[in-house]
Length: 66
View (cartoon, helix red, strand yellow):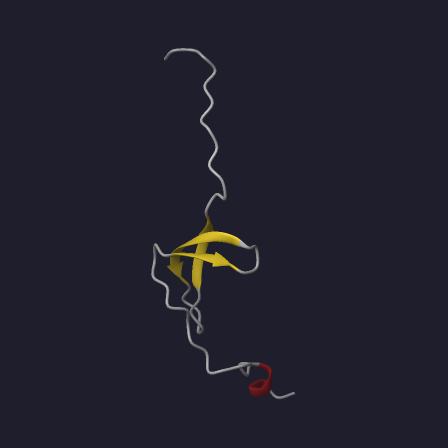
């Protein structure tokens, strides 16, 4: 295998997803909602994301007044 064959893109040409920083989408790998935080600096740029909590939870207090 030549170096050119080793790094050849499959299913190309590549087109980055139409997302901007702050947009929300669904991660197909983890099946969870994510928010785009930045973009990678790689040759093929890809959005960097962080997971959003799936459910909200009540804030629990221990009864003491502060």
